[in-house]
Amino acid sequence: MATTTDTIFREIKQYTQYVSGKVNIEQVILFGSYAHGTATADSDVDIAIVSPDFGKAPLMEKMDLYGWRSDSDVQVIMQPFPFGTDEFKQTDDFFINEIKKTGVDVTYLLEQ
Image (cartoon, rainbow, N blue to C red; front, side, top):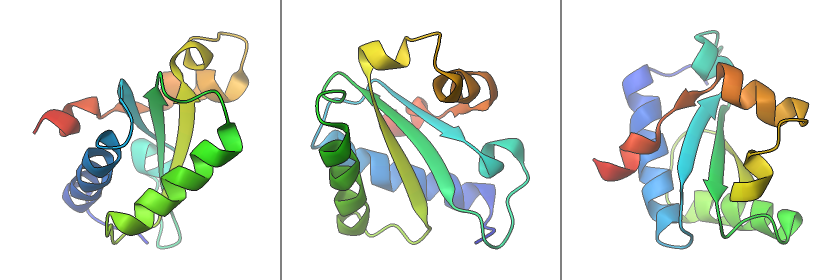
């Protein structure tokens, strides 16, 4: 679902503001095709959500994020990935390192 940057950021803002009412969010990072500018009609919106409340029960946290996605009424296909604060500090995890290296920090959207 290729969509304008403004629409994507508005949807991320709506979703993360909803989630921030459930968990303490330290950082939100857009990664994947939308961060690289290569999104197509089939692309989803990949976001990493870093929270001290995550990292204890990864499967349940992922399920919560998916449920909150529906509750927040976002109109794009959002793929949220939960990371605990300490987990996200790891330097030996390829996936986390790739998010840090190529992602776009959009935490500021929570404050708008």
